[in-house]
Image (cartoon, rainbow, N blue to C red; front, side, top):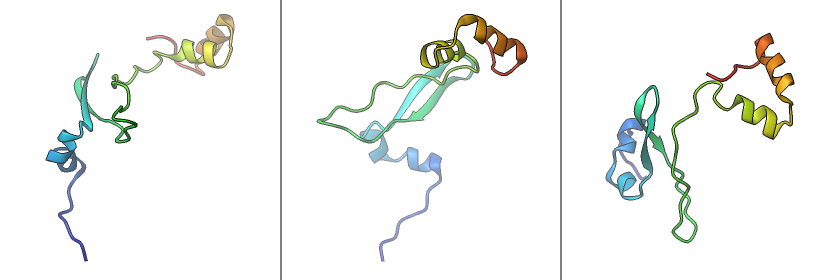
Length: 90
């Protein structure tokens, strides 16, 4: 029966083989500062996932998503913000 130590997430991410595979990436968040993110492990022909970026601030992409992805007009978005249904731009 195979056995190995049981590691916490933090301990697992500090392992040598994780660093060699570049599975952890450091990004800078505007409020938090530097933070570590786990990169996707899948590579195709040696090409991995795109560079990570820090998570968006609450409401940062509201207008883009509602207008470009859902096709809402600016006036409709303003109404949703006024009603408190969505968070407006920070």
